[in-house]
Length: 139
Image (cartoon, rainbow, N blue to C red; front, side):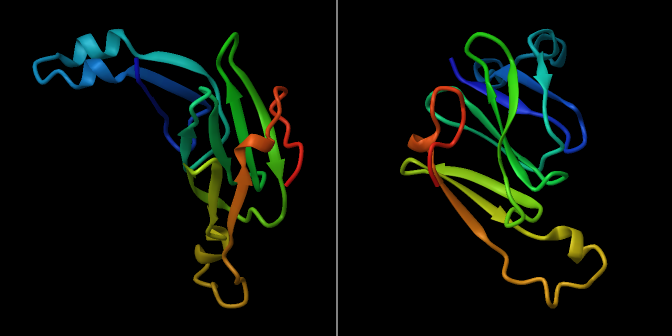
């Protein structure tokens, strides 16, 4: 079935819950809580997305990177890509075989100092270029 992955931005664990449970209008909070699973470690992130292979992609604004979690046999968190262009990766989505990451450079917005920190990038990564070891073969 389908699963929702969720966590607080600063939480170091990613939690899961089956969607079939939260679709039931009459389900109690206690019943949902009984089926929440603490999946494992995650990065400090703003966004999470999964692909059709069950891999979980997370933004990691602390390290200007994108992390990946493989969940097939064990919870395996690793850094997929780290680059200075990923300045505070904020949003992440998948469409047409590509992973799209928006970069907000939010760390500069905190000080109300956005001028001079442009451009704000959208990074496009070919999901098919990620091999079985969750390494990007080519960009």
